[in-house]
Amino acid sequence: MAVALAGSSPLAAQEALAFSDAELERGQRLYQAHCGRCHGVLGMGGEGPGLAVSRLPRAPDHAAVVDVIRNGIPGTGMPGLRATILPDEEAALVAAHVISLRQAQLVEIPGDPERGRQVFETTGVCFSCHIVEGRGVGIGPELTGIGMRRGPEYLRASLVDPSAELPVFRSGARSGFAQYLPLRAVTVDGTVYEGMRANEDAFTVQLITATGSIVSLRKADLAEFERRFGHSLMPATASLSSEDIDNLIAYLASLGG
Image (cartoon, rainbow, N blue to C red; front, side, top):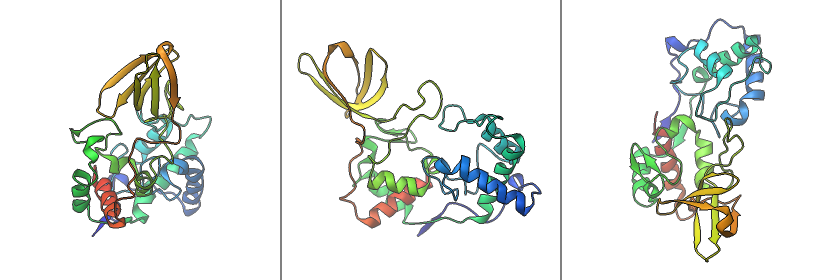
C-alpha cells in the first residue's frame, strides 16, 4: 500500500493565477533560495511541512499564500519575509510556484498506515512520549497533524537518526533555542535529574522527566549541568525492521492529511 500525499486534480480555490512559464521558473528559483531549506527544494517537506499536497489548510488561494509568505504563521517556525527581503512581485511569484507544486507532484510513500498505527501503539510504545489526538504523554513533540507539518524525508530521518538535528525555534523571543534538548543536572546534594528542556533562563531551568513530571531547578543549586546537544531522548529504532519503519512513516504522514 502507498500513501498519496498530493493529488493531481487542482482545486478551483487554489488555481495558480495566469503566470507565464518564465515567471513560474523565476518563482521556482526564488522559492528554492528562500523556502527550500525548510520545505525542501521540491516542496516535499523537511524541517517544514511539505507543500506538494492536495490542500494547504492555512493558505486556500494565491492571496493567502502571499500573506503567509509575507507575515508568517504565528506560533510556528514559519517566519514572515519582510518586503525588504522579498518585494511584492517576487512574493507573488513564489506563491504561484507553491500553488503549482501540488498540481505537478504525486508523492507515494511505501508502507501501510494501519500497520504503522499498530507499530506506533505497540512495538514502538510511542504514546509513552508523544500525543496524538489527545492520547499519550507530551514529553516529545505532539504528533497530531504531523503529516501536514513534516515531509516524509524528515519523518524518516527523525526515526532512523533522531539526534541528527533537533528542531529550533525560528522566530519570537526564543529564536535559535533548540527544542527537545536533553539535559542532565546534578544538585549540590547529589540528586540527578535527566529529561528534556522545557525552558531555561539565566537563573533557572525547567525540564520534563521521562515520567512526564516537570521539574524546575535553580542553577545556583546545581553542581553539574549538561546540555546534551547532538543527543535525543527519542529511542533508536534499530530494532524495527525496514518494513516497520516504512509503515510508521506512512502512518505519521497520514496524520492530519
